[in-house]
Image 1 (cartoon, helix red, strand yellow):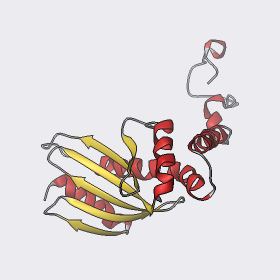
Image 2 (image 1 turned 180 degrees about the horizontal axis):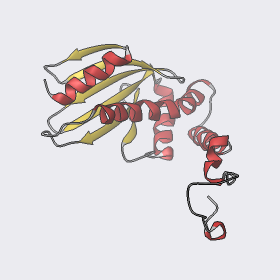
Image 3 (image 1 turned 30 degrees about the horizontal axis):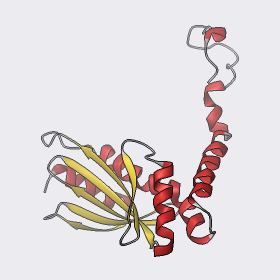
Image 4 (image 1 turned 60 degrees about the vertical axis):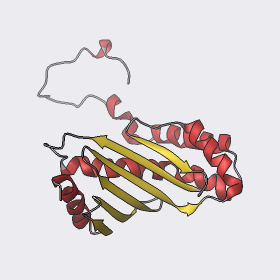
Length: 185
């Protein structure tokens, strides 16, 4: 069993989640819950790669698969590390994240956790749009716009203005900054 696979097993044991490890195949299946849902996740360690696939729990009905495929194309890849996919024939929606590593060095526990997090968070982020298509009768365009509006609403949260905080009063341990020359983030 490789060190990277041991890191995956250790991660799931410490997280106290339901999982099944298959050391011969280098894979582990886990059931991971978030605020958006409960995702079945497969983590596979290959010679030089770690792949994480998170599956949406619902099977997509045949009459909704074209709309989901359009949504996937419209929202495109959210980042270079993780992508949203659908098996059109089976109606399975999933996210896949993959990272390559040097087998001699392996991957740290933090990197394993991050790759699992990417896959889970990506599926969690699109869940509301998927539900809108499946149960609210929204089109792919409307569902994609809904995701954009959710992203814009997040920009209004207090943490989004963290770079525009007022200067603290009193003595500060750093030299004065040229405030007028700084861009407004």
